[in-house]
Image (cartoon, rainbow, N blue to C red; front, side):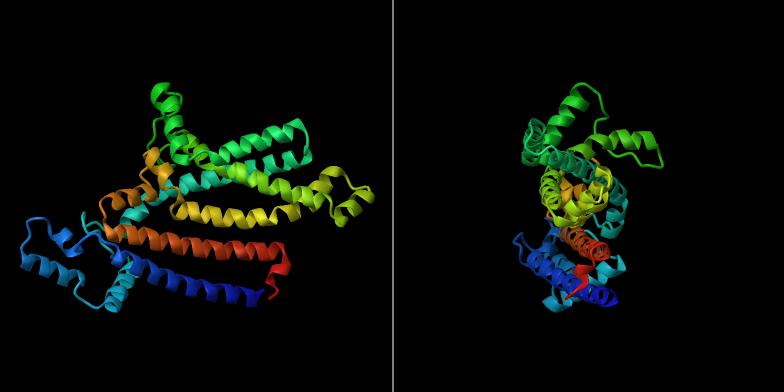
Length: 315
């Protein structure tokens, strides 16, 4: 287990370095004009633009620019071109909304996905299974931004059943925190519920036909114990891996559309506003921090998977 841990951590470091280089190169070569001119303003003189270029290091070789960017990222001193605000501070300010949205939606789609998939497998071939399959496919097919706009319009703006967007801190008012996030949670989770349900349904059906399950039934074990201890325990392993990747991806940037639609003022919405302004430091900061979180969280999920299934540690 220790050797597996060391290998995964070493691989994560290599991936993080490669990601930082790729992101830096992509954003440097993206067309959009001279960043020094954008910072200096439309009426800036040539000397003023030159001074800005020197201050921000745009006149240095690319390896030096990369090293300075990484130093600012690691030290938390990266600053926006347009607002001159500290990027890390803005990300930290939006993190509670993003974490609240992602964690709540993740819990919902994992629990309901497992429940839906298990129930569909146990009723395979019946009308209930067909109905669940149709609903799951509809949920997977609905775009998040479209579903969010429709739900917000009918439930919040038109009928006032739920609060109309915005984020309320958990410590400010737990009840308002819950009511303001309930609809965004469901909107973000809908597609994953259907997908996880379909994946787990197939896994459960495969496990029900395994020899060890038939042996457990032949020994006279209760059906519920066979389902929980033998069928679900093995069927849920791929779902654990999927959940780790999906959760990290959503938290690393996949929740941008949901945050923007419901005006939650999270990290995703901050990234969307920076994209509109073509403000490179916040975009790069969110991208790199998000990518780093995805890598770290994926390694953590690998450890959980290796703990649940010792076969993973081999090789």
